[in-house]
Image (cartoon, rainbow, N blue to C red; front, side, top):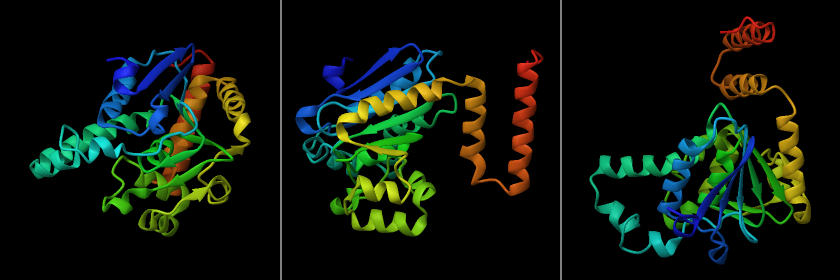
Length: 255
């Protein structure tokens, strides 16, 4: 399948991979074909890739679900999903989630470069990444509720982790839009930059991520990603165990 067919492409340049949504004529609105392709990217990723950048072609990151597909009657449409047995419908959605959850992989750091609209599925794609660099013109919204739906592309847990339950409920239940300044203020943005400086800021961040030992970064990501689910004593034990592995590895005594 080509990028022209799926609407998304993967390009690798040494330790950096770039996932680009390439349907700028519809503001990179997403389809099930795109989600399947993105899921496949995890298997296609070369072993030396350390950073994955996710971006949208043109003036928007992603305007969300392509309603011309989902609202029709063919494969992947709401109408088709509604006719499936409950478990089969849930399994289909799990398949779609795979296009997002691979960005949680422990061996890479993922960065969303967000300009313009990041709505619904677009917002959830940005949330799937570890870090989010927002252009000043970014507009974010968890808009599924306006269609009578719920966010189902692995975005709810990530949102709660970032902004807390109450704020996440307000964002999801109202479907309202927020600008980059608010996203920064409530903890959704890693960095906000002028729109013209977005690409340069992502390059600088990527360079910083690549400047240090890969195994140390992988251990740090695992420590931080698991911290909220551990008791303090368990987190401290995890730190000790990770540091022991690093010391042994640096001394040439690792497995």
